[in-house]
Image (tube, rainbow, N blue to C red):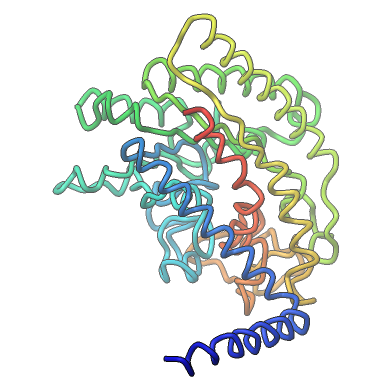
Length: 376
């Protein structure tokens, strides 16, 4: 026993100096430390919420948060989508996890089931973590897919409540996430978009404010997280062919997004004021996806660890033949080439991040999610 006591300090010093040597020789290990810090924060979040009952997550929006509601045998249900996670296409518009998965993990719950994936049998277990109603290609006032727009998604949850799949106690322990990443603007023709962008934005925000009010008043979810739009001018599809060779964003498009976000923040302030004045049970939390996206893009340029993947605007999926990657059509006849290391790329295709990209965005967004606990 005595010999062991003398030996421990020496072994500790040896390990300490070896660790320092490895740290200075390999600075990138700091990234692993960041992930350990993130893991601790996630555990803290889980522990915090266990004292307040089992939280449920209800998700509304488009492809940035869709985990399986998109039309079958198309788009995100075809290879090579899902190759990183879960290994096969799962309806996620990425090679792996999307933002919903990260938010659910932060809350310490499983990713809520996609509405279209609910099956007969053991319903209570399927609905235990909530439901995801988001569908790729949908928007606030219009859609570029066959999926339901935001108001109709809210109606789907309302119908489930009327059929008593959820009661008021369930809703009191719930959080809603609303994500609209710009399909309303993509739906508009180029001429309408350029000439009447302000009018379109006002129309979108007016309807979005109404829909947010419905989640509070009709549905009764007390905490609603509203995602600002990402810097859409930095998507490869918006940045144009030059995105393959540079990381320059479309500033004109980002200016329109900034106006959208300013009006959305004002709409949220109005809803909060209305809740206070009328003593309504509910609060709204702005989650700044624009800032998180921007931070993640900059971080990627300097910390990707590979010169080939340094440009974040170069998508992993490109045409088999052709110079412009955003001509890719994700259908059964499309020929696409997948980059060798999706885990190093930021964008999966011309509009959606890879799992790696979402991981970087989540790390930048995570501090905002603690607002859900600050409002306890």
